[in-house]
Image: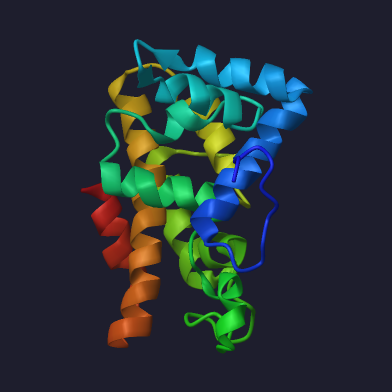
Length: 204
């Protein structure tokens, strides 16, 4: 059967359903079957399919994320940057993200409040104490209540490549990383977190 005429069936594989979804998206954007086929022909280069052109066409348009350079920055260790990036985008698999597993969603470090990114990194007393030490160490006067504001602060106050700027960028990423690690050690190894240990990791 012609792929352009095929109807979606509930028994189709996920891969086929995605192909048909892409087909419908192309048809919707181009307006006619002929225009859609012409679009596909444009993606052919000497009989080789141009993946980048197809990707640029299909990916959703979005607003440029201005804080990306502050997270993916040369002085920051990649694993620290990755956890910071997931945290800012609220993609970390903290307990309120996996409610479908029917687990106890209370914070493992606090026990009285649902575990969210904002609570874990800023409103839990352990995290607040870590940030307090870091802020005193770096003479940071502003109060940060969430990761978005923290990254915005870093983008504004830690511009350039001076050693002070580098230290501030590193401190934010490492603090987030080691608070997350402390949370995981409590869950998987039942190890109590210590503020001084996390702060010391950040300093070094």
